[in-house]
Length: 152
Image (cartoon, rainbow, N blue to C red; front, side, top):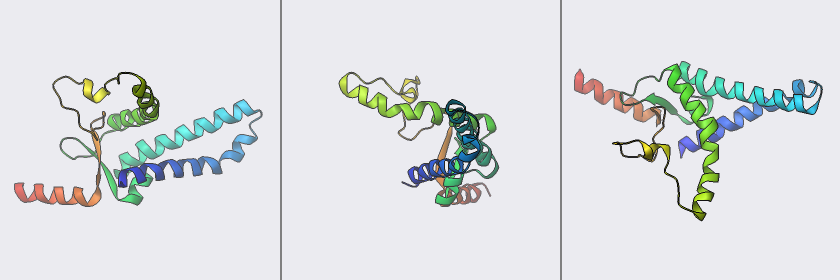
């Protein structure tokens, strides 16, 4: 549940920040240009929050508030820039279309998800295609303490 609340907080904070920047867009001269400028600002803020902030502190703003961290699989390390960009693009382009695909699936055969298409690997419900996961900060601390106890 924390992950969903963190995503909701991220969306709310991004929309709030763009809402505060709307005045600069309204004086852009024309509705089309104002909308394009607003969308561009929304994408830039989303990238800064989901990629740059996560690269710096292992969490976006909403995840920091909810105590969730982003880790690289399988070693629970810090995800790199490339993986974070892939994860951001996946969330920006693929996830919003899922309700539409699920509704279409009710009328006909459901298409397998990209995770299920991978040969030789079982699909996991919460797997991220970019090879990163979201975990609670306290669980990550316990995992690291257990690993240090085993190796130390």
